Image (cartoon, rainbow, N blue to C red; front, side):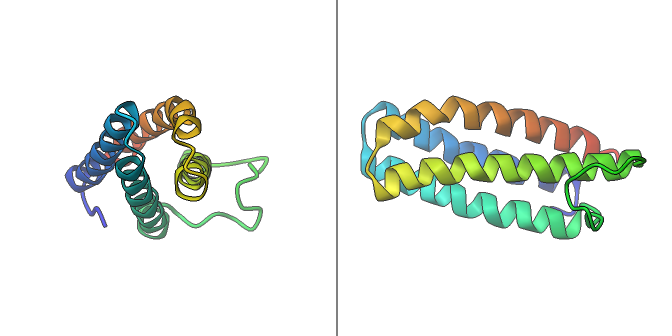
Length: 133
């Protein structure tokens, strides 16, 4: 698990590279390669976000991701990053199911911009904000 800002960014770039492999394979119509990349991305993403939540983010309060009436900046950032993790894992999981279970490469390609937009915004925010800690 990343213990420094550099390691956090390196983990994110490794995931970026896998997404790049998916996009290249999907663009070439190579279902098997796209499937392999998406499975690898989804598995690594789930491990990575679980480790971040365990080691870098304070545990959520009893209300989980529902914002309390009063919230510290640190608690708000943690809640927002956890919520983004949920959203990114959901889109990644949808894409994985499309290619793995249905062989629907076009469906996964259509979801890719949604995943890429969320992932890019999240990693930029996470690296900027957690790098300050």
